Length: 317
Image (cartoon, rainbow, N blue to C red; front, side):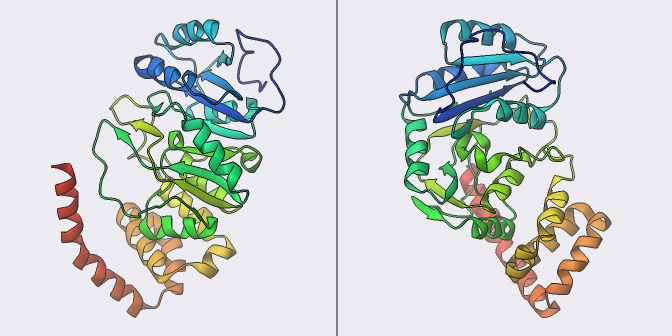
């Protein structure tokens, strides 16, 4: 095990080396919803699975709850980090311990919605050998979803094109980790620990540089929105979007395939959010986007804002 964690405290029997699926649950002060999360995993009809739970030195009753579940469910291995390392590093600790061919994160506030959810994700990746990432339809508990920016069907989508689509819309179209499954070997690098709020989106981009995305247009899992969730503390207070675009615009393939819509969207939002801190990057992007095209996209954007605002209000009503 990595030196940052202690050895699993229960269920020390050897783990099969040919597991199909690893379900990973990184935990920090998750007692409120954790039982619901673990119940949804344990009720799955897919048998070839291990469940790894990493408690990031919680100060609530999470560790005791995990220990009770692990005593009753031999598939659960768990440990407690000797100090708190944060969500991104704790996710990497889980990933390094995983033995499964496929990786399924289920965050402590989230849950699987159907007993066959894991089976359906596995089938999707088994049937599409070029896919490195599978996802299901967005489902949120605790708030209404905004109008869809991109309408998926049950289909296979080319990986790098998906990255371009995300940047064109300035949106993580794949969704939260609890909605996805990916191939462990394709994620051997782990989550980039420079990122916090965008750790998942950066990983999706990393994976989709290597292969395709397969979508299941049904809700198989839900992610919960509430003030105490692990991501709430940093969602609006970091430079992840700027770092993400600096990282990926530096890649030759993206510069060569970037559309005028992508360039406009990123220039507009980076300048709006980060001001002069984004000048170095946006100057490079402006050099690739002629001013008449920038002006045309700007006019289209301004004309579309009242329609988008009305759609969001109707969705929230």
